[in-house]
Structure formats: C-alpha cells, structure tokens
Length: 473
Image (cartoon, rainbow, N blue to C red; front, top):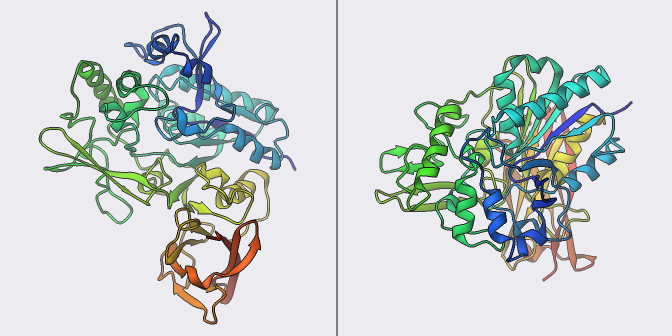
C-alpha cells in the first residue's frame, strides 16, 4: 500500500532565497554569506520590500536540504532551519522513494522575508495541495514545520474549503501563539552567522514573517494554556502583553520600519483561534527538554530580559506548539535528548529525527502498525556531563494524546536496587537516575541501562522496555 499523498512546508528560514537576474543563491549559500564583497548586496536583498506584495527580483526556491556540511546554527537566526534532507531520508524509508520529488509528494518553499499570509505563499501551498489531490484522487496530508504551520493556517482561513482536500495536518513545533526566537535579533541584541548585530537587525527588521512569529495581543487572543494559566511569553509591569503592541523595545533608525510590520502582524494575526477549522484532524508535536526562550520581561525603558527553560524544543515553547485544542486535535509531547540510535552523539534538534515523531509519522503516513506512544530519552546535557543525577524524560500517551492510566516507570541501573516513579496521572515524567549506578559498558565510550514503562489497558498491565545510553566519563 503506498503512503498517503504528502505536502511539506518548512518554517523560517527553511526555504532557499534566489535572485534569478544574477543567478545568485542569496540564502543559505555559504559563498554568499562569507563573501565580504557580496555582504552588502546580500543584506539589501534579504531585507524584505516595504510593500509585502511587491516584486523585488527575489524569489523563493524549495526547502533548504543541505548546507555543504555547515552547522545550521551558522546562519540560523530563528532556530527553525532544520535541514529538509533529514526529513526526506525519513520519508524515503516510509515509501516516498523519490522525495523530495515523486508523484505522492510535494515540497513547498516560500519567501520568509514576506508575511506568513502573503498571497504568493498561500497560492503556492494551495496549488501543491490541489495538484496532489487531483493527481492521486486522495485527500492529502500537510506536514508543516514551525512557521510553515502559520502559512497553513493562513490558507485555511483564506479558503476554508481547501480543508475538504486535506486528510490530516501534522504540525511539528509550530508556534501557534508565537515564539520569542526572533525578538533579540529584532532588538539588535544578537547576530547570526558572519553578519554583525546591526546587519542582522536590518535583515530581520525588514522581514514581515519575523514579526508574525511574535506572541499576539492577549486582549484579542486567548493566551492561556489548557489549564487556564497565562502563558506569560511576554510581560510588562502591567502583566501579560505582546511585543507587537508594547513596543518600547524598539529604538534607532529602523523603528519606523519595525512599527509598520508590527502593525500589520497585530492587525492581520492578532486574533487567533484555537482551532484550524471544523472537521479538520490535526496532530501536533511539542518538544520538551531543550533550553528554549519561554519568557521575556520588558521594563519601562524598553529593556528586555529573557527567561529560558527546558519547556520547548530549543526554538518554540511547548505550550505554544500544543496550544490548539478542540475536536480533531491530538497533541503529543516529544522528549528532546539522547536516544539509543546512531545519533547518540548529539541531540535531535529537528523533532522528526526523534523516534517518537518518526515512529508516529510511520503510522500516520505509511500505515505502519500503531505502537503505544511511550518513550524515554536521557536529558541532552546530562548524557555527557559529570552530574550526580541523570535526568530521564519519559512520555506515556494513548492514541488520543491523553495520559495513559496508572502509568509508572521502573529503572534497572546496575545497582542492586530498582528505581521506581509514578506519572501521577500526567503524560510525562522527569525521572532522576544516579549516574554512579550506571556502570554497564556498551563499547564506543557508552554506558547502558534499561527502564520499563507500565500502564493499564483493557484491565491488563501493559509495559514497554526502553534501553538508554549515557557517555562514559
């Protein structure tokens, strides 16, 4: 049985940016970025036009699929550049033999210098969905990463009828109610790659999508989590606010430019619904375990103080990624850390490289047998550091994303005693394991231990055994 027809749309800045007249790849070409003679031209062209719909000789190519061996952080100003080649490799394993080409797959690039609801981006996504639906005679799955989810939402709001051609939306780390990743660059406090803070600010201050990523106004959007608690992504002395509205952080010659973009984002995207539309099935993935900017306070003088926690995937707060609710919405947590596979030497910053996401994609796209959504990962920082307690992040959810009943964990390090802990009705558990108790050598500078997750299902005790690895120090 072939996999379901699939459309993929990446986030910011996950699409190639080209200048056809000169043949230059403006982004993410390492040559262009490193060339001092091209630097000014690069900055000028990567700065979006004042009219978001105006032609400026720059177009979007497809999703970024490689960087010639460079680390993505070299040029990744939003933290959303997850190379598509890693996704294509996964999709090929699921039966999309020709990804990113093929008759059951479409990849949509978009100009991230422009707004997420810009006509050209929405038209490109609509065409990909319609073409694939017509070619296969089947409803398609839309796989959106990060800001690509906001483009998808823009299309569904513009044309609700397109939902009839969509079988499922799979949203990986989508900031439904914003992220703070672009704010320090917009404020001129940080730089990316070889650009100075001023050059970085110029590029981002002209990028309409950079403002679309910021948290919206809590007076028009419900900025609370599932328990009714305020998200507090951005606060002032008056309480929860939005950097699109409370703008004392803006200063300098780019203030007028930034005000225009903030005005548009606040007007067009300021009121956000917790649903993508009636009758539409949505599966969301929210990361947990990587240090993420999850809060920012602004004082009366406009000074920004950022707060970080492990409640995210490194780019998007988990509470923004799983903010959608209602009928048809199923949310899954993804522990970000070390899993016992070939990528043990680093964290899986691209969520689809984590086994929970890749396994469930196999079910959603290729019809693989459904396995319990129970996973464990060693905290990325603890796996290779001298800490007395190694933190293990566990999730135990049913097919509807709800916490598995009576879930508990039993760890078997190499000490005489087992270590037990209960989920206490929650879908996740942070379980400390004494590092001194992990002594079984696996080879290659690794130590291993085992852990079981138990739960009740159909009146019977079910369990899943996990093998976990840490670095030998």
